[in-house]
Length: 136
Length: 136
Image (cartoon, rainbow over all chains, first blue to last red; front, top):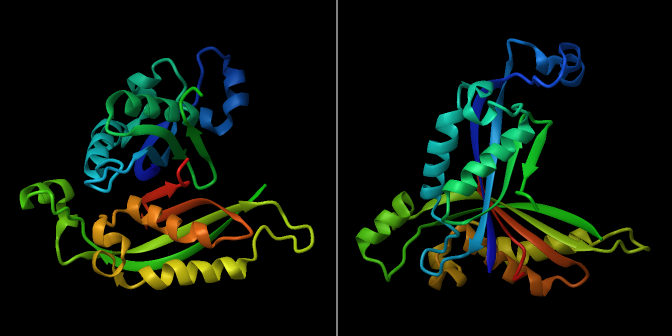
């Protein structure tokens, strides 16, 4: 029986939306306030959804201690209180929350194999949220 | 097809322990949750049903009926209980959030007549929830 487990995490980071492939004017039109050269920040809420059968002996899809440990070390420790534009993941990609979703999905997919990764959902603000389930 | 979700809350205590494991294994696997005296949570339950909108009533389901079924089948049995000791399902299964979601599904599904059960979501805390869609 497949069960889905979702855990929420939070980190705060700054970013600036700017594409080297666009002119200064184009960047300003496309990204508006988010193109401010000094950047700005958000409290990002991250939801990691994993799935799998419930282990008969533990009653768990996966041990939360393992998931928390992985996400804390590989995501929160690396992204919290950082400027996203300066991280390796965004050396070529603009750190929109769309691309942040994909970057986090790839990190979890590659490194956490104790349950099946279903989805990464990120709330950039209370009004905006983004989801990525891999290339379907 | 329209989906309708009804929320409810219940408070209960539990602990995680499997007799086939040694005390050391139980402590390592379940950590603080292994304390035999139990600990508690305020659980939030979301029950989502689906169905076609009845042309006469405009309803997917009579909310009063859904609420009554949730009360009699789930809340009366789980609210303010020590799940391991007082709820039959958990005499043999560990009351993890995963198993609680499955047990609630199994209690509700046979009782719902007009609408079909789509999802049971159980929040153990605001940062941890489990979804169960039945045996897919």
